[in-house]
Length: 44
Image (cartoon, rainbow, N blue to C red):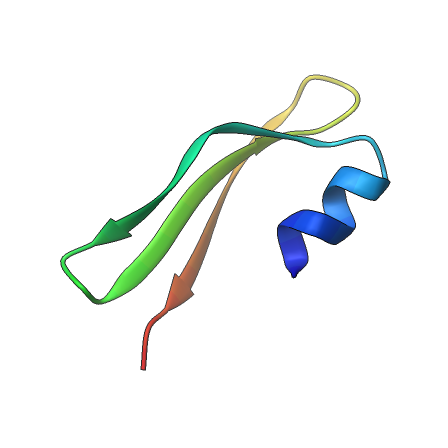
């Protein structure tokens, strides 16, 4: 949901959404100005 909202604002997913040790979902997003951010979501 967050990645979809960011894409509407010009961001692009950098790579794929990864599952880290069944504890987190991780991904990188490149914003319209070229800045790369890492997003993390804890899996419950």
